[in-house]
Length: 280
Length: 309
Image (cartoon, rainbow over all chains, first blue to last red; front, side, top):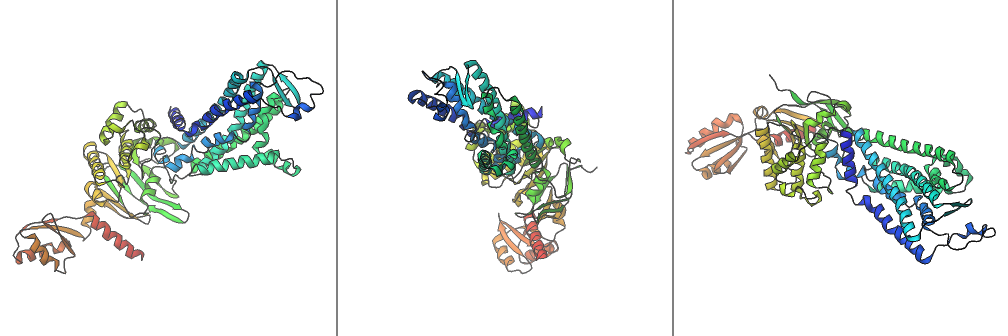
């Protein structure tokens, strides 16, 4: 009963703040603009994909549709989109330290465990909502502006997915994207429990994510030793549903690893918060 | 039968880096007391309150609230306490009403009628649906008191409830505290820099300096134990009497206030004073001892300072 009230209060606080909506507003503006520009000026599928195929296939008409652009837009989930997650997750605990509201909140007859758990659940809710919004909005707006049709995926060869199958693969991809972004959210959340201002956890988390991505993508053999210990090494899992056959073994394996990262970050946040002196 | 202790600390200590903010603190606040917690800036008053409210973890020692040690499994003790810790900080993007409603619901079910009653009590009825970001400092202070009183707690822990307020705001809050004391029988643990405020409403005081308790007890008993008394004298020609008394070396300090002479003399010299005035042709209407917690506190701090030096 008390936990439900704490959670309700946390959700109210988070969704009463403007910064929570920055990501939603950006998506709502950016996607129609991108789709509109593609509709107006066209979209060149990178030549490297087509070079090998033009000798075997002849393309007539346009392969560009809402699904293809939505698929390409998923690449922002790597580096750019985590910013919106970090903006909220990195702020959710630290802002209470910075504003001194913990003095008010923590003198209620509620346990610190319940507070930190409610804040974490709120962070996860936000992550789920914004990723779902990105997925849903990109597909819907893409279909409205650019139309539907088969999805042509150029990866290790050409994969042609029917519209129905494309949608189901997008759903799986975005579910995996949520799982991936929960790791980012958990890391930002951990930093948020350490800091007394919102800026430090936001910059800190983003720095860690960027550095880890750089190490993960660099093709240097010496770095292979540390790559398994970086969560960004498993980031690309949300593209796996667009392979044929879908590599479920790899997906499950990577999801377990990412889940372990999230759990570790949450446990560290929990321990830190429980032991924390509230001095602000 | 003696009233039960609501706050009891035993050798309570808190260390920050290498600095003992609170050191072996033993205070007892009993039911029905209005306990004034005094001390200079940095003495450890707020740290003590934060320890009591579970915001800080004690380095050593322990404390009991309502006879129980607070812990994970008896958090409900805090539902019997209302607190203001330093400046009340609210969620500025929410209205005053939302802040009270949601913070209150973390303690127990709060009715709209109770919220209205509390807003009325602190004089914020017209502002209750405004965002807290639009509140003035004084309004935030009053909202702080409102959130502390909302769940009708038995014990109030108030850390500098009137600091930073204008004289009118101070008066309003002091009146409110008086009301709580006299009409609602609350036990109050109050830290303040306003010695007059402490003097007006407190039954007991504890003085802390450098994290250590210097004195503790009933206001009356503490003042009785000191030689530092103010005596108020009413005479027929106060201005003339003032001139003569100013020349007397056996009187520490003399001033005129509302046609009454205020003298700093020890208890034993009161008879000598009366005789002196009568011998000098004044008609003495009244000689009243007026002990002052302010003078007591200042003299205590001076002696503490000397001991440290």
